Length: 495
Ligand code: ADP
Image 1 (tube, rainbow, N blue to C red):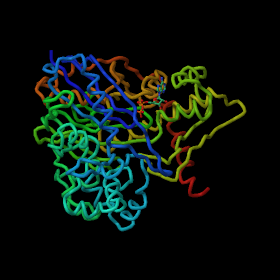
Image 2 (image 1 turned 135 degrees about the horizontal axis):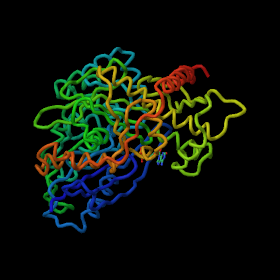
Image 3 (image 1 turned 30 degrees about the horizontal axis):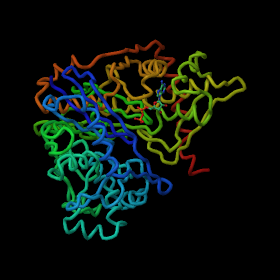
Image 4 (image 1 turned 60 degrees about the vertical axis):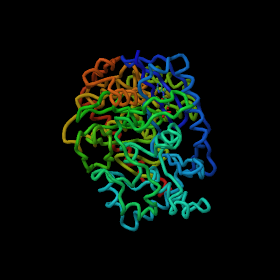
């Protein structure tokens, strides 16, 4: 037998999943870890705790498997989250600053008012935002006592979570990250595929802290003696959304997937072209193999499945997330009600931090079922906005959309999505596409799968949702949504 282990280090839990050659799950283990909110808008993780629970779930998942049959390990991770540690002791100098953390928003505002927006955009494909790692490193060097001097002496190392895990798994032998993670730091030039001195200067980050950037597919190191799965090569690395793109087999340019988690993340493979966006999307590295880059366009909206959680926890109109479909289906339409879930502003393609949530079109006849249906439509409309922006950037329409994530379990939502997009929406059997993608990358890297054709037999379609609604009805819903979005914009500034 040949097995591949995927480590899926997410924002709230660490998982290890063992796949066989047919990409079937044979064992898995998962553990949650603590979220720390030391101040409003701050989110931290303890890097040592992440490592401990990742190591433990790895040990547990492979407990019943002969070590010699484990051929490769893949890593996928929460992206952008920033760890800085001491190279000699291996100890972090502070907690990890998580991607959601907004503490560096003022550093970003300064960089923008100083006129650097275009420099960052053209080199990194990103917008200047607290989301990405660069300003988080600057914050740590500015606020942890002695850190900047230590960094200049070459004593400190920076890494995203993949890099931190590789360091720990190899007992400090490898300080490396892959292109997909490097491309989320605001410091890596996606065209030249190198750390960029001008950006490092603007962010005040010494080059000596940075990891080597390696292919996403191919051996990046071996697990050190004494650890679970010792000697196994680390053959695949990718950030969670890029791994999901791989796990959905979106290997060809033009193929796209959308993940319906807390937020929604759409990525489209653009092949060897780093396509700049004219529609406020990000250009990012998907993966690299044998030094050949594959790029992607990415759009994210902050509130996806979280809107369903709000129906449950905030309004109390459903008991479980899975009740949303049943309630929405008790009415034929939302009776003109539109929900814009801009609870924390609007992400792509609108990017308005001052927008706030709104509900329009209420009448005496409005019921919880109409609100629920409007909420599902809002998620599907947000994703439709991303798809339209992506199609405009790519200059060709989608043929289908592959979906995953917790809220993709809702047949009602998926049908609404197919109706609004007017293309088929395809849900695979294994919606754990992130871990699957890491396993695919590692399995290819280790030579277990030679060609992409072999992988196509490892991806199983579960349900295909074909559009039923007429194009004109879909256009009416989208038009009403666009109108409502305009009314939600700028609200926090005016209020
Ligand atoms: P994350 O990785 O961001 O934590 P998940 O992929 O686990 O998110 O998805 C969780 C989200 O999916 C939650 O916001 C929840 O409201 C939504 N969700 C889960 N099951 C269903 C369902 N059956 N119908 C609709 N939404 C669901």
